[in-house]
Length: 281
Image (cartoon, helix red, strand yellow):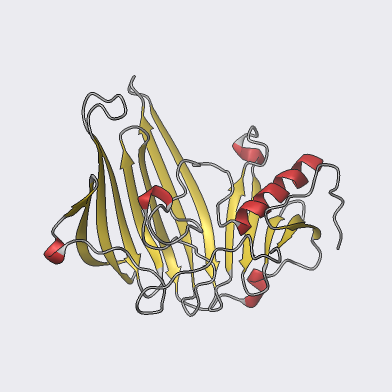
């Protein structure tokens, strides 16, 4: 029980920092709660799939992340991560997924977790459904734990960085960006962009150039990425996609901790020490 609470506290601190919890398919964040702008997961420079604080763009969806990596002997490693995500019109978010809390448990022992981020109230929750316990993390007075959201010229949040005119490539510092135009994905209009980063031969001990390719499709109406593909010959391929997208307003109760859960409290970024974890109602 103590180990579970320690893990929950660590996960709660991570949730306030906008990062996903550890779990299967842990290679690459691929946009979950990711920050906007360059330097986001997998080189994504649009918006994260589940950014908190985005108003007037409610939705719910299933998120599937599939990764594969072929080893030198031909052996292939495949992993799949399934989530359910929600965001309401006020920018509150909820993420449901199975999490390996101790890093060693077999799949049958993975815990079903819920992560709630409420930037309006300044709190987040990490909830263990089976044990009906959790951690409530409160934003510090200096505002740590919640990232500030930047907005584009439209005032509706960032979108994908444009490629060259008429889809031509733009090259800068070894990175080529290409517009892929528009297409409908899961019932929503999305704008695509492909970014290719090249590591020259010899720069990392490589005999030949290494090409790292990221393709992302951003839906402005949802202010989120609905499809992302990342290929790196060193680490394999990862594809994240939204399915079963619903534009309806999620129920307010989804963004609250159930009254019968036993909660411990922790300030954002400051997990409680070991042994301090007797929860309170």
